[in-house]
Image (cartoon, rainbow, N blue to C red; front, side):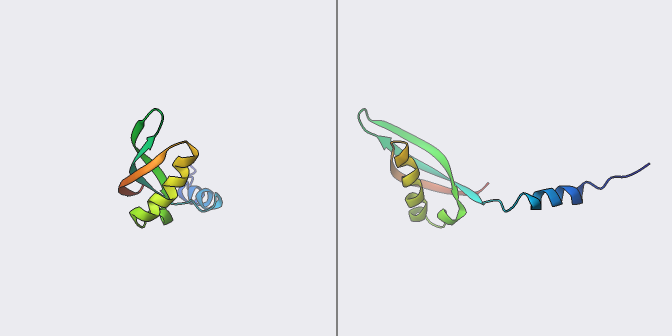
Length: 81
């Protein structure tokens, strides 16, 4: 019976796909005006934006603004997934 070694092939495929950007999750509070809407949610950000709440807020505020939301606060940084 012939045995196939799958682990090296899977590793080679993963390496060939290229580097994966590490991400972390943050919990946040945001709002919209006219009419007032409040949101409590989570968002994925690049790891480089998760070194502090200030860095996360800067990155997330831009992302939310494009969707018509204003960031109120970063509640917590949840780390890498």
